[in-house]
Length: 361
Image (cartoon, rainbow, N blue to C red; front, side, top):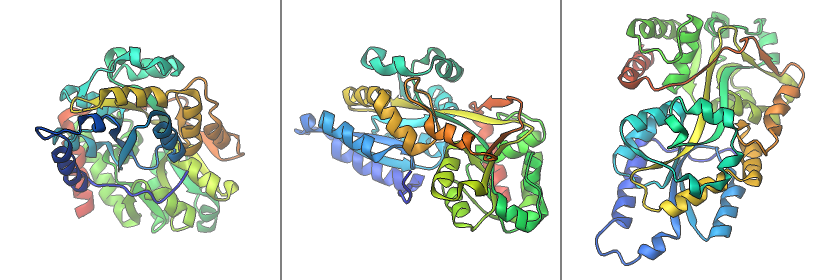
């Protein structure tokens, strides 16, 4: 995977999309045929092979404008603002939330013949958030665990983690990073207490917030995509991290130095998928792009770049298997306790308010 891609925050995205709306949606625009030769997509950072994108443009003649974001929570206000993206990549619970807000349109499956390559089990799992698999086509899946530098923990005389509670050890002071994505952050404490990762109970979330406030003196920083870089550079020793980001460190660094642990209490799992917003203007290109992403050779390119578990049955999951094949690099203590993330609706304010309390403490 490449690094250093620029990530946009909501305010920057909204400003950019205001220009986009004005430039391609006005009356009397004589360049409508030219618009069909371009499309706009919104995707997570570091989540698509540049080579795959270049091949699509060469094969179709369609120029792809890709904007990037860090967390699902950034996407909804952008789409609600009227931004005219043709395709977006979002996670299961965000799909569920956007459907509740009537922000997505159905995918015409007759225009996505390569959908037959997608694993039926993953489609069935995603159908909990997307009934009938009408609005989303799976792209990648993954889980979250604890990632750490074994050498650094040995030097600190800290035992290797087995539980989420091990992230609250004062001995980790200055070497611990935590997620800034609120759903990922709260997964740690929710599972530690035996709660659901999809809790909507304010009392449960308040308990977790107090845990994070007490933990804060040990935390070097709160971030998302930068965590893998910090661990790789040796600036931090341990963090909750998603499985695909772990691949990056293994491939770029000394593979024997690191370990990814799925804690005893279990964890979240997620499926990221392609969707078409209601505000999309180039539906033909949107369907062509989604079908292209389901193609065997393209799925392989993206799997090699991204490192998450592919959902394409015709593509060898070489990167993820690589992690599991390194001795001592992958340990699963969870006994299969993986919980799919779901929309928590208005209870998301308990998460964001709690995180703001942590940051302000």
